[in-house]
Length: 288
Image (cartoon, rainbow, N blue to C red; front, side, top):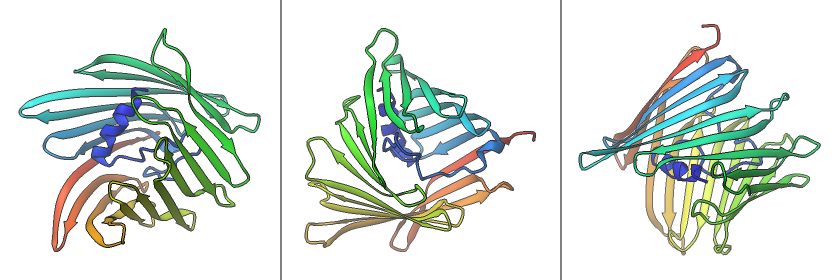
């Protein structure tokens, strides 16, 4: 799907989780009290060459439309991309379909659609999609449920390999661990564990072992509001000898409804601390 190309751009901004997470709601959230929100406009400046603006609208706590504009400037030349998504839901609030449009100055306009199917218990079982009118409708992902596990199979798409996620849930249905396996790289491991306190995430640890790092461990700490405040990425050789370590920290300005409206991201190297990115959000609340 064309949306996967946009996800690769989001990595530049550190914006959200780029794993599929079709089968379970993402445990990571930086916005609260969605039922009180009408719209959010995010402006994120990652560097002097890249910027992104995301406009989201909500009704009754459900995301209805999201428009993301990204601009890249290289050697004095700017290119832009717009990715827009429109969400539709069933009467009981389950996501039914997402209609997407990708508008790029390089490749023109393309469209796609994702459709969500559920079992009699209201659990997502299949995500189908196409690349616009006249293109075949194919399976993008399937979900299989166990007593405390969910297995998500994601088909190869957009030049990316097929992959699978296995989620482990606690007694309250929260994701405490998930592993990612890429087709053709089954001997590599990518495991994330999540720790909660008082119902909120306090730590996330991702450990990757492959032929590139060969070991990379990323630990993210969260504050009492459930927002990431520190991320430490460490790489080791196969003997667990330290290769490299980097640290990012985040500072926030909150509004009266406990949502952040300003975020500053810093990169720390030894005794130095440099501002790496800034973001601002304009949040419009219902009846305000």
